[in-house]
Length: 459
Image (cartoon, rainbow, N blue to C red; front, top):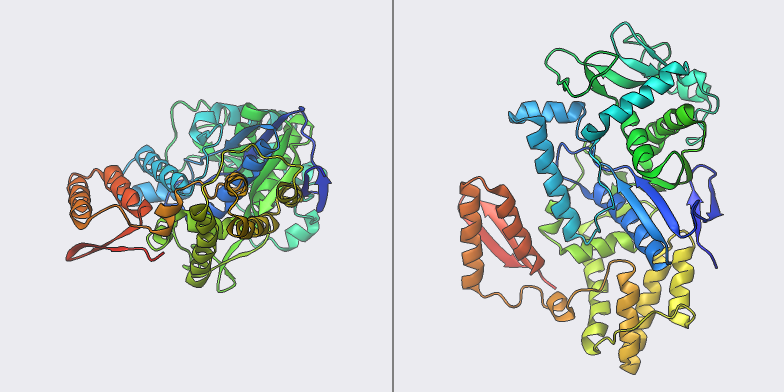
């Protein structure tokens, strides 16, 4: 059975075949780095980490691009609130993103472009759209995309222009000819940055959000790519607008497959900053180890809603212990996966059906039961190898089953003191590094007005 992927554009499962045999070009929309990453970000990063891992397990080479948006209104506002430069804020947040992603075993993308490094390409794309009559400059200085000039707008969201217009709550303003028109270049307002490096024919300003991804994707992967992905919340308007810009400029399909991961919910309500019901990755890792969080996310299908609760995390921890117990019982042999053999074949069939991780994880549990029954080192090796396709079960079983072991109270106290010194010196990167190091060994730090206490995460 060959790989099939659900295409959000066609709303159907489609056989996957890359444009260039053996090579997959994939672009995934990344974070706007004005704050720490939350669970929704983790869900998206992990969904596409599993996608690229499985593509590699399937003998494809993968060029994976995940961008960083490092200029927008929220970033400007947060930098002003903090009394720091935009670059200082975004550098700090990118470093924090990497720390969080590394903890979760998320492999770095092939390329991680920052929007501010690609503004000349964005301006080139805007100029092309302007020359084709698909963009216009308003009296206020903004350059907008003329949505009604492009046939087929709305094909990703599945809505007609009139349906989208009926749902539009923003009045025509700032010189837009239609409320659905979206900004390509934002004219600089008083007090806003206008980098001198951005030599724009449209005057001082900065790029709109949507144009960033079209430019970075095109520069790094070409005008048509194999897979474009992101969270379900990006399907409209962000991805719809990407399609409009890229296809309006180049006249070819932007992506052959569009993939969208599902929302994260809390008590079955969408988790979001506006509702105040979200958790940062770091807040969750203060209570649960990183592999448990990864397992909790990976065992759900990427397109399904993921409902967060401590009960579900506790269950994930206990389930993961069952798999590690099998690897602790029998030393895994180093093996090369034979995909024709039953367990591996069932795992492959699950993953080849739109990255079916729930069924693939079920194979791991069946295999663990067989390891417990037969004491087979070969099967234990297969369990570890298949787990590796999902970024799981690569740690030391004893370390996972007995988190916190190996550090005495004196050593912990020393590391806490070193962290306090780092914080006093405003070396927050080192302070975070020490906290994460202890956390990886099952030691959770709790800061209070009376100092820092610690406890061992219960296994």
